[in-house]
Length: 254
Ligand SMILES: Nc1ncnc2c1ncn2[C@@H]1O[C@H](COP(=O)(O)OP(=O)(O)OP(=O)(O)O)[C@@H](O)[C@H]1O
Image (cartoon, rainbow, N blue to C red; front, side):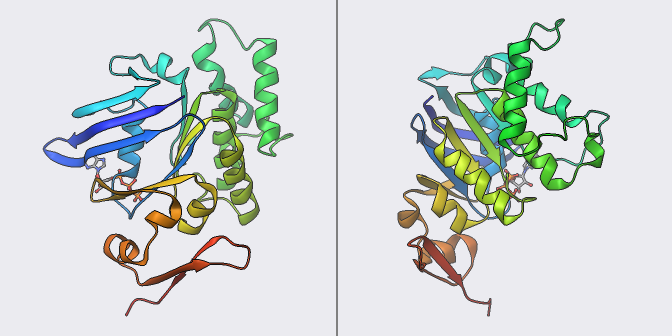
């Protein structure tokens, strides 16, 4: 599914949080959203996910303006993995993953056999098989994060938006998640703080600064020492590591 964001702005009260955002994401593409804390990444993702109504501009899925779409209709197209919340819940891990089938279910019916197969496959895909019966509050941060990804996979969406999906994961699971996102046919927009990981796994990067899009293009085009200095306030060298991946060497702040 193609996603087009055109001249999008969102204000909280009288404060402009993001403005003038133009972003076209082709079907199957993985786009990394990067930018400092508070630059507007989550706010933009929430607008694209239909959770916030833009103050100006449009979000289109395959050329269709989603303004006015019901949450259920949006969820039949797109899954959103928000930053992990610590919310206490009496649910079990399997129940949380099964929520991914909600947009396709009759409200009064339980999971169908086909739904159960999809849920089971999603749990296996994130290596949580065997933990379906575990109470949510007893899971580690990384297990919860992977369960949220499984919920998104169980939704079988055309597109997936993820907000910092790796912040609780060990290195192996970070690599597994980003490889999964890079390989999938689904359209992906993922907010990431780790610029090296973003460069390695995303087809393109979009960089936000103070609520505006300041650069978009290949990781090499976007992650220049000048932008790292101007946008992130860091002194860094950009090169290539021994595996041929883009590498960023950070100098200590003066
Ligand atoms: N509902 C709101 N009311 C007022 N200000 C808000 C609201 N939502 C977000 N903001 C502000 O908008 C700015 C952008 O927030 P946002 O969460 O989108 O940034 P971010 O790039 O995702 O940040 P981080 O990297 O820290 O997660 C921040 O300064 C935040 O405090």
